[in-house]
Length: 91
Image (tube, rainbow, N blue to C red; front, side, top):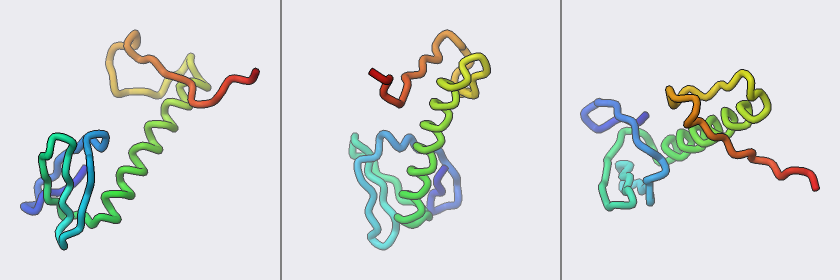
C-alpha cells in the first residue's frame, strides 16, 4: 500500500516496478513506463517491497510445511492454489 500526493492510498504490484527514484519526491516507474509519485520515501518503498515479498515466501513455506492447514488466502478456489517448494529436495 502506497500513498499518492493527495493522500489517497492505493495498492501497487511490486512485480511491475522497473525502478524508483527520489527526485526529491519518490517516483515509481513501472515496466510499461507508467509513473506514480508517492509520499513514501525511497527507503520506505524498498522496505515495503521487501516485507511484502518476505510475507509471500513465508506463507508459501507454511503451506508446504502444513499442507492440511494452508494459510494462503489470496485465492478463493483451493484447486488453483499451487505451491512450489522453496527448498531443494535432498538427493
